[in-house]
Amino acid sequence: MNYPEGSHVPYLLTFQIGALNLRILRECNKIFKESNLPLEMDQIPVILSLYYLNGGTQQEVAQRIQRDKSSVNRTISFLQKNELVKASEDANDKRKTIIELTATGKKIAKKASELLENLDKSVTEVLTVKEKEQFQDMLLKLIAKVSAL
Image (cartoon, rainbow, N blue to C red; front, top):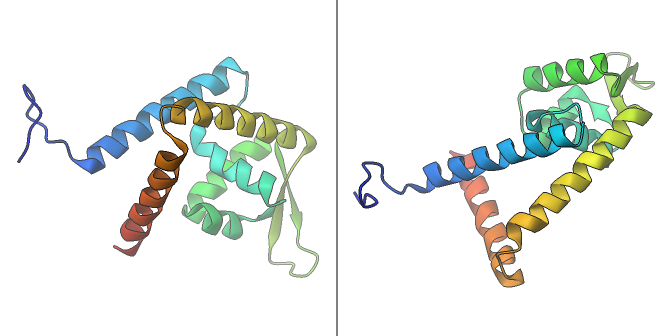
């Protein structure tokens, strides 16, 4: 195995991706806190899914963001307690509950999206347009491969 000089840990891609993910999550949580957003990064996929796709059922949200339904349910409960989402019965199917953002939830989702876009620009400014495209392509390939395991 190839170990970095003075280290006993190999440069494995999975470690590097994990380290990058952890740093980004920490930075996002810091930015949200500084901006007085009552959210943490693990709640963002749920709220942005509801924001960009105008609501949906818990099952639909879970499928969109590829998380288990119980995790999404916990996040939605948190968002409901903070009056960021509202639940209503589906007019066509009484067994389904539709989750939608409240007006406050929409404002917070919009602000979170803007903050993330700014962070994305800041982080990727070290890459050329071609490198960004290549990186996106590589990430999608890796996601597809891991999803198939």
